[in-house]
Image (cartoon, rainbow, N blue to C red; front, side, top):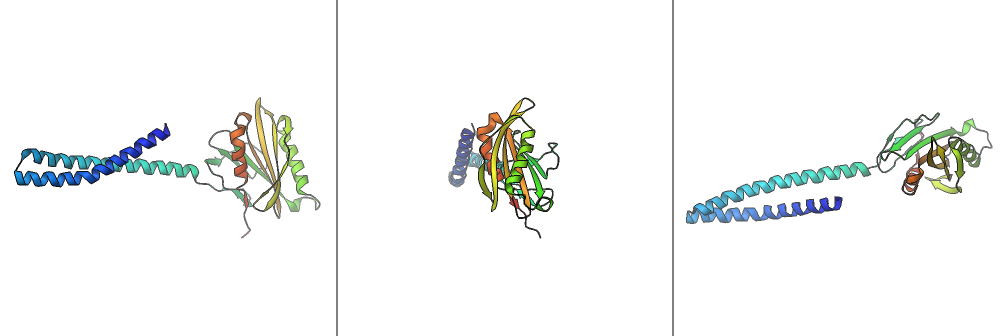
Length: 229
């Protein structure tokens, strides 16, 4: 339906542009003939071309306004928006329509949701200075994974994989389970920055897994630390 509408709009625009080029010529010809031959018919034709030209002008104005509106909507959909963590240490800049939400988690530094109504992210941060000196990324991932599992019934773990986002080493792992009789899949990304560990907890409902997991992965890839001023 959208393609048909777009083709129709394009055709209208082309026809209007064509008429705007032809109408002035017809007006001049009919005006000259009306003066030379003093013909009522040519005078009426001349007036008709004026009205037709005005109609074409209005049509082009409407067409241009519609095109500008459509482009504005598309740009709003595509333009990335920056979502900064509450401690100012990092941010997401995802494509699509995301917004701040309040999901009731404790100790989160950011909670955002997608306009599709089933894709979400929460970010947890731990300062290295508050952790034992021998605490590693693998330890952080293990502890954070236990938290993620605790929010689901009968959780099942996927295979962990090594990732690197904006120069930060990390581990990414899926968790599938049930909460309130709804099946969810988590995408847990654990990152190590110079001074902090980050747990990027993304999730969606299992029926949307095929389309939503790639989107959650792409959102995680936009994660960046903010250099201290």
